Structures are given as C-alpha cells and as structure tokens.
Amino acid sequence: MAPAPTTPDLSFLLDHTSHVLRTRMAAALSEIGLTARMHCVLVHAVEEERTQAELAEIGDMDKTTMVVTVDALEKAGLAERRPSSKDRRARIIAVTEEGAKVAALSQRIVDRVHQTALAGLSKDERELFLRVMNRLVTDELATPADNPQPVRRARQRAS
Image 1 (cartoon, one colour):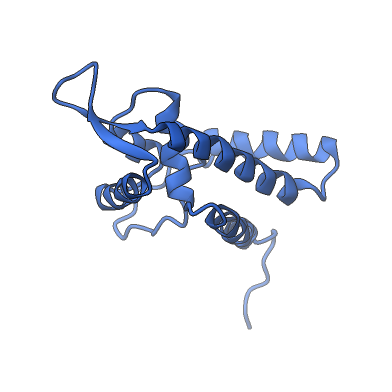
Image 2: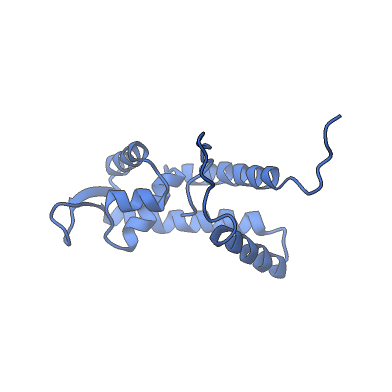
C-alpha cells in the first residue's frame, strides 16, 4: 500500500502551473514570431548594454542556446552583435529599432498572459500570491541543492 501524503503535492502544483503558463506564453509570443527566450534577450538587451554572456546568465541559458537565440534575432532583424563601447574585447547584443518595437509589443503580450493567469484571483489574493512566490524565490527556493545527478531545469528564470 502506498504511503498517504501528509501535505499537498507542491512539486505537482508548481510543475503543472509552470507548464501550462509556458505553453500559453509560447502560443501568445508565437503570434509575433518570438519564443520566450527571444523575448527575454530582447527586453534585457534593450534596457542597457549587455554582453551575450550577461544575457545568457539573466535568461538561464547555456552558450549553445544563447547563440541559437541571438542568431534567430539577427536573422529576424531584431538584434545584432556589436563591439562593446565599454570593453573593446567584449561583444554586446544591440537591439535594432525594429527590435525595440517588438520588445515593447512582446512585453505587453507577456503582461497580458500573466494577468490572464491570475484573473481568477481577487486583488488581495493576487498580491498575497505574488508576495509569497517572490519570498520563496528569494529565500527558501532561491538556490538549487547540490546534486551528483543534475536535475533538468524546466524553464529559465523569469524574464
């Protein structure tokens, strides 16, 4: 006989809601030809001069994924690799004028998906939920445990 859980299955709750939110986000961003990773790179590159490595860290992407993402942004005419104005050895990801417009549009789409996801909660519930989630992310669940067999990440950090 299987042991009965003594608490709600937090792993299932977080995994399921994260999966559904990712699929909704992917569908919404695909309408303008972006992926969530492309959105993440655009909005963070448009904020300030950042290297590809810095953007990869922000988006929790490995080098290969970051290169593929920037290649797609360049092909779409939304960003380009340029020498840094601060360090001649470094290359930054510069957002084009069209890329800045797309970043603004994609941010509105992301905001809409998030608002829709929380629409079933009252204003007080939304505020409490977000406060608690932020506390978990910055406190108890801020750092993954060391594990000899790495656990595959389901998603990059919030963009």
